[in-house]
Image (cartoon, rainbow, N blue to C red; front, top):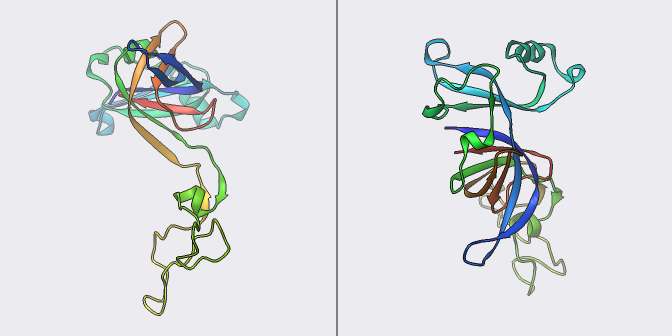
Length: 210
């Protein structure tokens, strides 16, 4: 699976050929540096490790500094491994070389976007799970508009089942959104315009897989 590491710039909208207003996300995708190439003989599988985003050397662990120097590049913020990188890149993907958005994706491709969703802290069941609230007084609720009500754990089973939807910490999870269409590719600026929304806040890292 081929892919690239990017950074979410923000959201905008464009008009399609048939006049529809399409919401889309602008992603700065690359250039990424190849920091390791794995193969079946030495590692048991084929993979390419890409790195993206500049990082100060004083804030980088010493083992990683040596890892990046071996690839002939400066310390990077994000390192991601892509297994079975696309066959047509065979021979082009070498240690220290750059991989750009225009080399991996073309307009019309469908990609999967992986990111960390926005953290929202401790939230109730209405925001976290979409409960409807009281409406009328029922399900064990009284005068508490946004509370969960009875959870049904009476003398049997005398416990709360695992997975019961309750209040708790929301967001900050790894989220994968599949089948987003690439609307435009700007190879000079290393920018991709992707239909729909992508997980995470602005300036957060996003992994795009093809």
